[in-house]
Length: 51
Image 1 (cartoon, one colour):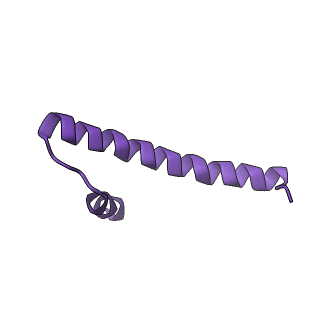
Image 2: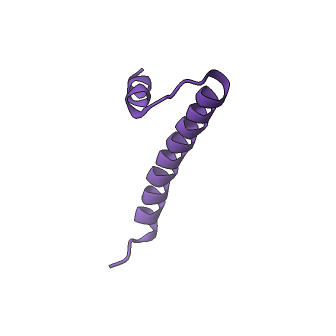
């Protein structure tokens, strides 16, 4: 079973958004650790997303 073009487009959109968020928080975590020696963990990320 293969997705049609419309479904492929929707899946790519969802995955792209997830990847954007992941990369954003990965960069933020590196920045906090390298510049401030603060460990930005998953619970901090969850709190930030809610805002």
